[in-house]
Image (cartoon, rainbow, N blue to C red):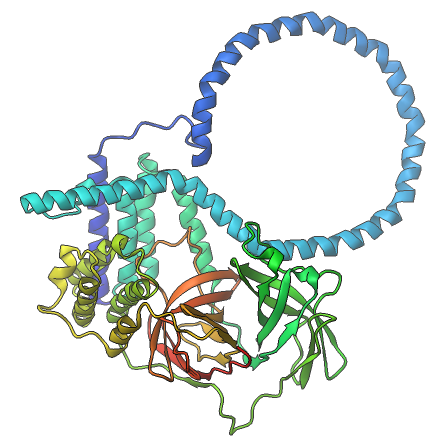
Length: 600
């Protein structure tokens, strides 16, 4: 362990001790009478509780009297019925044995039919189950967490007003609840770990110690410990992408589909062949009767005809719906080939529907002179701390370019906490220029800047990068092409993650970039507790317009994730190529892809 990491560990442990002393001085919360219930049920229980107790007071004597009256009758009936019961059982036993022998083959047939259907249902419901679990867990937390959040915002606003009147420092630690203080320390520990100032495992264990101590003292809900364990398991699941080749084969075909699908058409984007799976990204437009429906099925119904494929060797494949999403006009999804085509397969014929022509995909790969996607290796070396702060600035930039509706509510206090911690452990110097850029950008966008962040910034306004200025200049444009392109590129591995670009759908206000990832740690929102993005995406079209990305729909299972990134501002209406860059904790990788719009 380096001296810098020792300083960071000592800093966090001192923060834990100070936090425990602070929380112990707070008024002890009254125990909730129904604390074991999920938050949405507690209110109903509180309302029903007094009525239930009153009813019990009235009904208990009546129930006892009825029991005393009915017991002799019940015992007499039991004695009278016992001979008849024994006779019936003796008569029915041979019939039951015969029925069992007769039903066994039929049961085997039923099991043979039901189990595959159950497996199919489980596979299709897995993404929904994960989303439902997240929503239920969010419901369980919603009462306490929302109140905590609102109290924190109100506290910060009140402290800011008091500070403006009396010159006091806003956002004081003593104004925080135990939940807020724990979350604040977790964010600082995460920031120090991402900046390379402390080992992530050490940082996580320190936060877990505080969490356990607060739960033991009755200062936080015990379910927080379970949430922490779920977070660890989810992070541990990503062990890097499977070894082997990754191939992206563009399709770009627009095919008609049957009325039972609920769509008017389907566009095939890209087939990705990976060591562990083969998946095809597709998008479609909802039919008129499904437009603006309030109950959209995220998967289209292909009816009796399932999409299928066959290869040059005569092998057949099923295309199963792996995941999907929809809005009030469009649908998008991922179809998974079963089984994975073996090595050496020359081509695949895709049969999406009886109405659609066969689409042949060449799997042999482009030649050496192919003028296609050009992946590039890691970009220029940048310190972890600088990349961390720049990621916060890019998030701010994406909010502004996406319409700016949430900018007035955007809170930089968590970023200021991490910057203060980096300064305390002597790890801020490489990121001071990035802090200056963040403060300058926030000031230009009218976002409140915490005093700790201003104090860590170099004096005077910073020069913003040319790409950021370009994004700000083009914010608000509505001139993007209304078209789709099967952008296909396998990016070099970065920080144990393999990203593959699979498609782009552009509209007037922006563009959706579809990405698949292997080894990615896509944390569900109800488990996410960080002030920084793990990955930052940007792009530049060949007409000189820069874009930043907001994360949209995403789903994950095992070590695999499907991502939808919203690029803003919109693409130039005459763009014909796009350079996409993803920056991670330790570097960045880039790929330039042609935009083969086809029919717009």
